[in-house]
Amino acid sequence: MKFLFALLFLSATILLNAQEAKYGIKSAIIKKDVVAMGQNVECTWYMDDYGKKESTELTMKTGGVAGVEKHIRTIADGSSAINIDLDMKTAMKMKLPEKPINYLQLTPEIVEKYKIKETGEEDIAGKPCKKYGLEITQMGQTVQMSVWVWKGLVLKSETSSNGMVVMVETAKTIDETSAVPTDKFTIPDGIKLPE
Figure 1 (cartoon, rainbow, N blue to C red):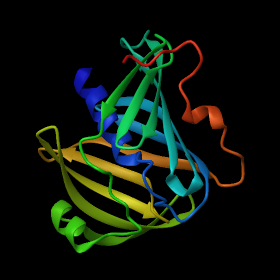
Figure 2: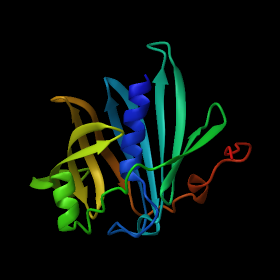
Figure 3: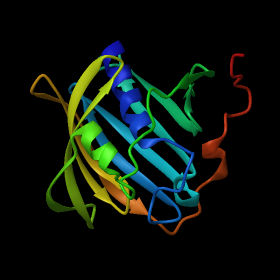
C-alpha cells in the first residue's frame, strides 16, 4: 500500500508544478482512470491559468473488496506539493524532488536528462497526442514511462518498473469550457498545514 501511495504521489508530482505557464489551453477539468498495482483509482485533474494553478483529486478504495473509499487532493505550491487527506482532515507539504517536464518547452538538456524520444501519435479522449518514451529517476527509483501529450497536457501515461507496467493513467473526459472551482486550489476549511 505504501508503494501505491508513493507511486500515486510520483504521478501527481509529474503533473503538478505552478511556477510557469506550461499548457496550450487556459483551463481544464480532466477526468482520468488510473490503474496502479492492480488497483483502480479515479483521478480528476484541475488546471487553470495555463498551468499556473493545478490540483488533482484521487478517489480509491483501501482495504480490499469491502474497502473504504479514500479521497486525496494534491495541490501544486511552487516547488512543493500539498497532499491533503480529505477524509482524515490532514495535510502535509512535501518538496518536489524535481521540476516536472514542460512538454511545450523541451530543451536539449531535458531531452538528454530524461532520454526523451518521440515514438508516435495517437488520439486520447478525442485529442491528437504525441507519444514520448522517457526515463525518470526519483527517490532512488528509475521508472520507464510512455506519455501521450496534447498541448503540453499528459492525457495518458504508462509507468513501468523492472519491465513490468505498474501504473496506467488514461484521460476519459476533457472539459475546457466549465469554470474550474477555485476551492480546488486551496486547503479546505478545518484542515491545518503543519508548520
